[in-house]
Image (cartoon, rainbow, N blue to C red; front, side, top):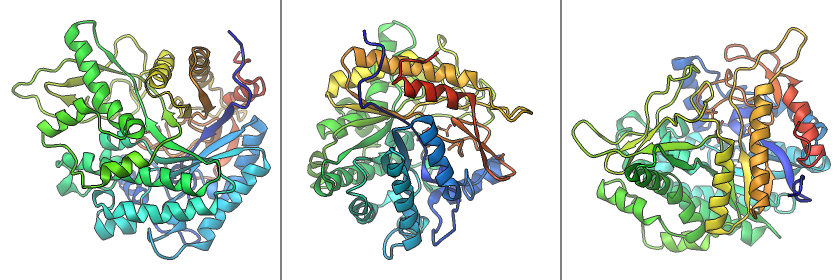
Length: 480
Ligand code: BG6
């Protein structure tokens, strides 16, 4: 077994636009649905808004310099649609597109390969007001217009493109990731309808990259958690297979087989949840082939059998808002199919996410065996409370342990034949969590702000920064 990663393996980290950039209404940008959703979570839970976030818009040169110092050869970030097209369609915002030109040029000048995500939860608010956003098919045409513009603009500078971030997570947590009016929130079929529109948008973007970018490579960035059975009872194993079908294969079969997973679709049809598919949709999906799959892996999941019966109804994933272990508000349940549950064999983060480096290897090997496409990690990381000590340091040994275990798992997968392109943990800098504000930090670089006070967002290298620097310099051989 070799000790290092293959030559040319990309090392970096990730962020997304609304979680990092700030400048939510600056230089011509108009709100995205995340600006609105996060104003609401500020009111409800006191979590920071996206208005300033980590202020990367004003700190991007400093951030890229720090990434270069760490030795990054890749940076995965997203473009904010409403910065480029403030109204979703129509006039381009010259200052908005200029920001991404400057960022991408800065990265390239620093020897860092940009990995661009076209869409990371932040639909222009105008499109939500106009027709309900992802609820309406019109969004696919508007996305195509936006994607065509951005891909054409950067076709000679960006080789790696990811399309829609985490469709699977959008289905689970749809009111956090999309603006859904209250009166529609019980219409669960709409979760799968939104996802169908995203499948079309994904296919359109794949076609555009292949048409416009010389040597361009494209794939989805999927939130993926392999599912283990709670016990070796046959019913629990079957439940885990069902959960795997509806939570994972339902997405990957679209990307690589151009079809909906049959067991999952049959379940959705039987419960009135299946999306409406129009003539020509599946052809478009089949034409939009993916070159790779980008994976956002944080945790594995666990499932058990759930009989149908009185008092049992369909429920979607709960969330832990408090950051106290065990405070999760419930588990996804599909009576007669499966019920998700806590895995008693794994420790969790303070927000109840199971910590499972082996799950990384399990996932990579399984996906590569089934689809035979190269894989990249575009997210993986530990959400934790960090303390800035009096001498201005962040001793995040817990994050180092987490990352070490997961990098070792990627390496084991490579040694067993899996083709891997990149490892980009979450996140390059501290940023606004999608569900827990600024307290839950992921960054290798500390951003000095709190939920209440944006302060100056000063950047401070954490212990994990120096550790990752060594890991990259040794191409993954030195993880001590
Ligand atoms: C992924 C998202 O779901 O997980 C990121 O792509 C997100 O946007 C990350 O920040 C961690 O989740 P959270 O809720 O802890 O921010």
